[in-house]
Picture 1 (tube, rainbow, N blue to C red):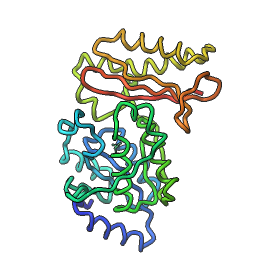
Picture 2: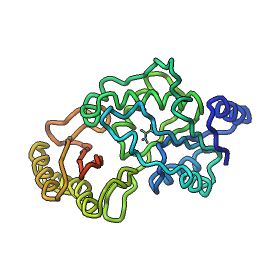
Picture 3: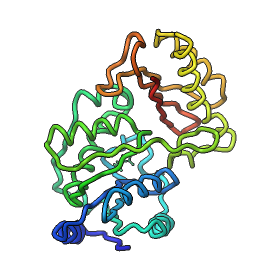
Picture 4: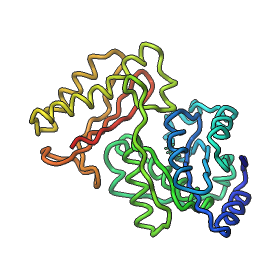
Length: 280
Ligand code: PAF
């Protein structure tokens, strides 16, 4: 497995692979890898001839009061995990390599980023799309695999790829959960053992929404209230948002009469957790 720090080296390797007619599948990550990342890697390996994973905690997508500095990092362990998965190359640039002092170009998807996480994390998606576009330009992948846990991110990337006529195919991979339903996330490390118990409330609230809808409830406001009451019955929780949205354009729905995506963000202690469920 090649571990590459420099953009020029990464470009050279991917150019050579392309010249040989090999299909490159790519998984972008911010490291501190867990089973959900590894399932994206396995998907990528299935789809491509060469698999590239990037590890880069992207400063551009963190707000000034967010957890960029504390974001968990363990490169040595990450590299071991990726080697065991048979990854071909890991791109692991320094922030100065990605954003030299004269850096001044950004890419922004506008409408899809106004609601949900975008409403509470100004500039976040602009940081995500900018870094993903840069990574795509450097690695030039045929395929890139993204998790459905970050559903808004997935749709925003798809929109960018479509709007900018990019050639990379975006593949979505289902959310990977712990046994008790908690969606896997690097930020789960922030949870104390009591908070960890409360963190199961997100998935349980999504199941509650599914049950209410299957019983005939069509009013998102009523379901939201029930979900909020349920989540707040767990200690250390604070709901940031619960939304019922169209799964394609992410617009809020007023009445549930077709498949709907329920997405939520909840603080459990200092950890901000997100989850979602497509309810048919
Ligand atoms: O989902 C993530 O981990 C990040 O947002 C990504 C796509 C690696 C961009 O920094």
